[in-house]
Length: 76
Image 1 (cartoon, rainbow, N blue to C red):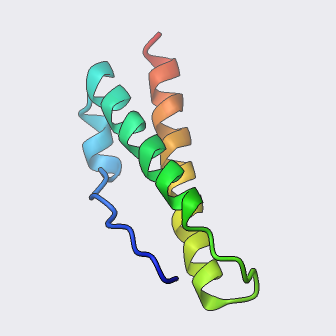
Image 2 (tube, rainbow, N blue to C red; image 1 turned 120 degrees about the vertical axis):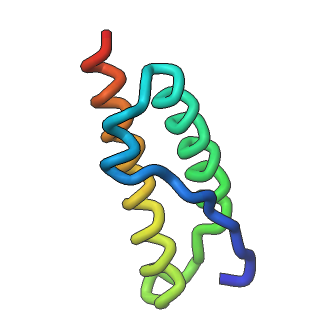
C-alpha cells in the first residue's frame, strides 16, 4: 500500500464493558471515520499481501463497529 493511515487505538472488550452511551457513540463515530479513510486506500490488486492486510484491518474495524452498535441497541 503506497499510502498509510495511522489507526488510533480502539478499546478492547474490557474497555467496552465500562462505556456509557455517549462513549460508545463517540467510539463508533471514530471507527466509521477510519473505515471511510481506509476505503480510500483499498489496494487495487486483490491478490496482493497489501490487499489481504487491508481486508483484515477493515473486517476487524467492521466487527468492532457492529459490537458497538449492538451495545448501543441494548441501551435503548
